[in-house]
Length: 193
Image 1 (tube, one colour):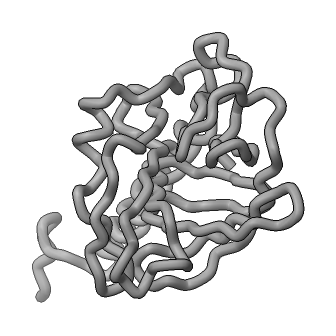
Image 2 (cartoon, rainbow, N blue to C red):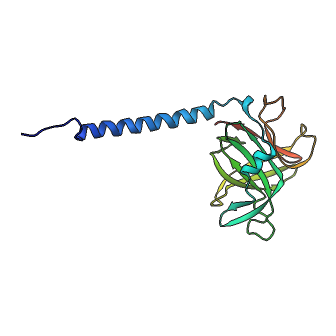
Image 3 (cartoon, rainbow, N blue to C red):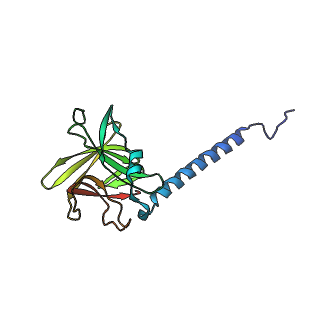
């Protein structure tokens, strides 16, 4: 006669525990994703220099190289809960990135630039000048794989020329922009897509 103990594992108990574990993991992931998507733009603000120093690398990892960054050009925004969208100009002279990439771009929340959806991760971008716009090409920093292109147009609302700046989303702190600025040019972005 077989004795069955409540502590003895059975196939049914194992499958039940496995199902519960998978279900709870999926629920936690969907709650985290929903909280990022539902993040109101009012929570996003300009990142402080100390916050930027904590996330911007002195040498950006680009494919197999570590390219020096120019911290004085760093700009970013944060939701105040550890999520940043930030970038910095890279000093590419002498690297294979010269002429292809000019900026390191860190994304820690879903972001849409132009028609490109950027998942959280590290990116680099470079630009070429056209008639009265810039063609900005985004790449994955780790692989150099092209992600997409966006047009940066001469901005009438930008009054100060800066090498790089991320303006907080519309509605945040009364700022009038939801743009990323390169010199006199800018392109729109939106959070949480």
